[in-house]
Length: 278
Image (cartoon, rainbow, N blue to C red; front, side, top):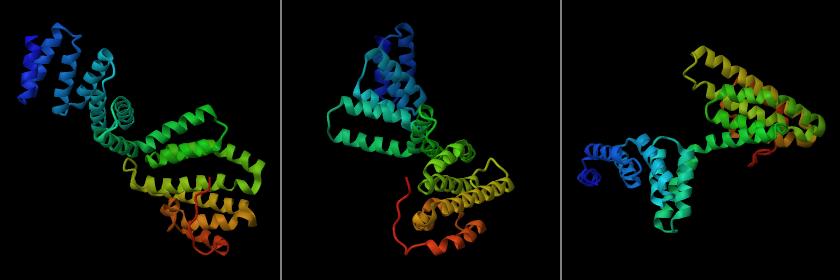
């Protein structure tokens, strides 16, 4: 008890290293004291030793059960570590356990920021699970490829697209002209990959530029094929997407894209907002 109280006194005085030392000595005598475990984690948080704080809070929760403020503390530490997906879970636990008040509003805002920071990773995880559960739906592969390219994983995104190619062709054979999005959507991912690869500093500049060119060429090939598949019924709609879709911006100045536009221009309607195909 003496060491426990000494640690608390050190904490209140701002002597955090001494506090942790006292808590450690206390835990050496009684490692099951959940109160000391929590106080030590709080001191580690104040010292910005966030990994230690997470470990301590996790140990406390395992012994003491759910406590709203403790979930909030761990969410904060996880956020500092960039582990946003785990932080979201803890923010959610806090909101479930605590009353709806101004503090809850603040935590909702923090959880919202975590969602934004982790959106692509969370999307990737969901699409991976969707592919696992139903590997026959090419849309799941397109979603996974898009999440990967947004994370900068351009090579992995392209591998996913290549894996989905056979499925795309099956849909096209079954549906015909209506299946043009199954060519258009992969084209936009190739376009995004063309931009992302140029930022991949792990590769030599010459290799980045060559891959960017290859991705752009493949994007244009798919756009032209989608245009041909769409036929008179859907070509105007596709052409409008080509003109307005920001996901094609990385290749808009590529010679291949500018050349392809010549064959699409005649089908382009007057400029208006367009929605992305499903």
